[in-house]
Length: 113
Figure 1 (cartoon, rainbow, N blue to C red):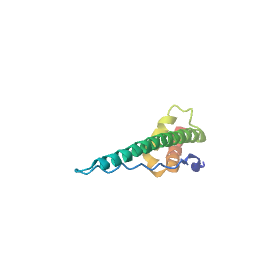
Figure 2: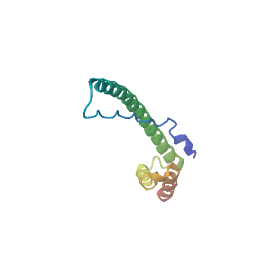
Figure 3: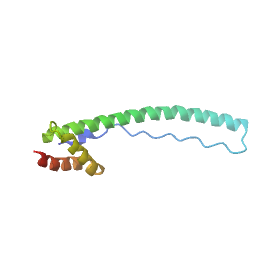
Figure 4: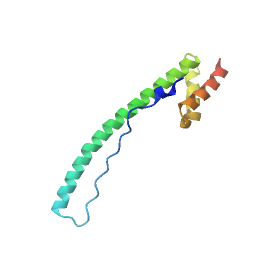
């Protein structure tokens, strides 16, 4: 199984930085500058949020694809406990990557067939 198929190729977006707060004693010019910086920040944050949403959607799509492919490769996609076995394998191995999840799932699949 080629696990590189399930890597998210989209770049992870950089979170924009909020402008520094105004000093206690500020002038009108300071306030205008801060207002301008804050408006730029809001626009950048909206772009970031949209990009992050697309990134997470792609990550979810790839996860769903991996789940279906793994179950089909092991021949347990129609088994009544196939998805439960995947959930158990995910809980046990997802921090080590898709390869580890697949390894655990294949061990569980041996018990099911």
